[in-house]
View 1 (cartoon, rainbow, N blue to C red):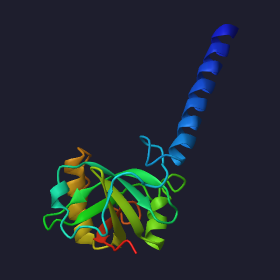
View 2: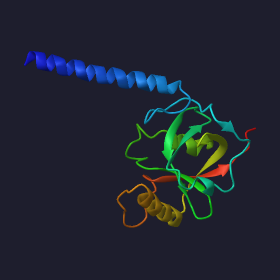
View 3: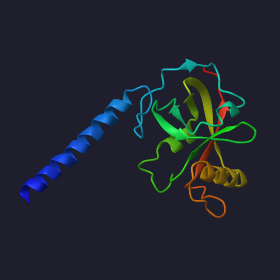
View 4: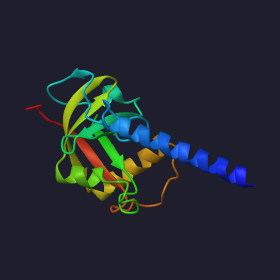
Length: 170
């Protein structure tokens, strides 16, 4: 029994070490590694400004997004509405405050860079608070990512939505 417990302890320690090393490597990498937050987005074709119509990326499920301050990147889901506007949703903002720092940082300073299929675009993230738009895009999010559909509008404290506007690199 003692050997079994020691073996289990070694296994748990090895998993913790691998996760810790991966998290450290991701922080200095060009972009996120899986679910681990990454460093600044560097590689890709750099554009001077974002797009007015993002519909060319309609089939894309997730992108890399980096806030300008702090310069950390993460993988995020996206939604593109009928007018070609790009949105980045964030759920569990209130219930996972220790995990979800970026929405608050984006609300304070929305300057960001997104990388989609190897192209880097400077953008401005603008928090959306229109309940009808939140409900419509919340349903679209549920359908796109096969999530349970909530009845009624989403809780605006838990579900935040950012519209991605064009921004010049200057």
